[in-house]
Length: 207
Image 1: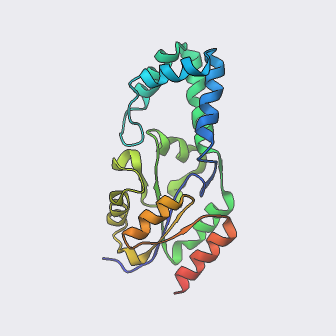
Image 2: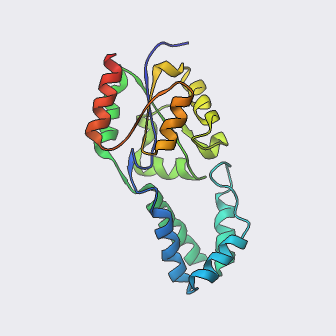
């Protein structure tokens, strides 16, 4: 097993500037307005639809949009617009400063990603941000079949990095995900801003 250190990054709220606590509700509300339904009727249709679990399964994105479109009685053009709007909201904008900083770490540490995700995220985020040029492995929940903060999410990432917990620093904006990493022995810090995160990484690498 390699002895090199690793910096393991979350995506949403860390490598991407996006409010994980707000974007989904705002996105659903935009499409409730498009549908012309009141909130109660809209919520009832979505609740009654058998939506695939796209956060822990692969190849289910087409079925997800087909089911949503049928539930809301959207035409093909509206479904395509809804999907495009979803990924724009999901991905937000790249945290260019932190991504560029991660790129400089290649001579000192491995850089990897562990992110809760939706089926299709790998393709959409690669198209926008070219994460594979900087991070390897990239561990998505929809491919691993488990979300953070479940311990198996971290253990699978460790296996792919060929690393022991003490070799890894994990960066995430959610306290529960930080706690989950620490529970398996990974050092973890909550991302608050780029300066604080970069200082924590530098300290970890200097230890």
